[in-house]
Each structure stands twice: as structure tokens, then as C-alpha cells.
Length: 109
Image 1 (spheres, one colour):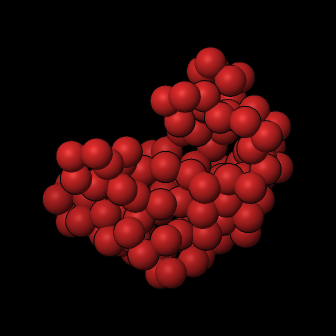
Image 2: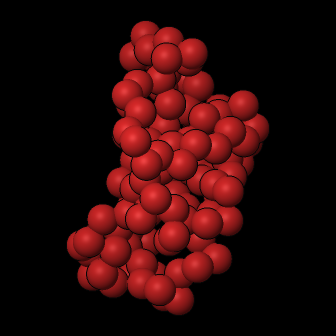
């Protein structure tokens, strides 16, 4: 399961509204890709096309979709959002990460 914090839910809703994307058609696609100083990085986009091996979750009223390979890294991860002057934007609270880089953009397992 991939979880969505209240802070992320609110920001996702406002982005969908700002970009005039239909909540019924679009979902959040999250994946893990090679890169970053720790080896793996998160990628997050809005999408409206499902793929054959997608893993689909709904938490806190938000539909999250990930590919099977990425799900192995994302299991039990919470998508969060921090705004303001010191905010990081969207970030992942991932219990599977053994370490993260200093900037918080990449991780290793």
C-alpha cells in the first residue's frame, strides 16, 4: 500500500483544480528510477492511462498508481507535502529506505 497524508491530499487537489484536470480521470503516478546521489530517485506525475502491470491504491481519497518494480521500493510509503519558506514540496516518508541523500531527493535500500 502507498499512503497519502492530508497535506499531500490537499496539495494534489489544488493542483488538479489549477490545471483543470478531472479528478475522475487523472491519478498520481509514482515511480522509482535510477539516479541521484544515493542511487534511486522518486518520480511523480499526473496520468490518465493505466499500464498492464500497474499497482493501484486509493488512500485518503487519492488514487495512486505505480508499476510493479517501483512498488517493491514504495511498499508502506507515505506521500507527504510541506509548504512554506522552509518547505520541501512533495516528499516520501519511506520506511524501506536505508539511507537518503542530504537534499532528500534520492535514497538507497
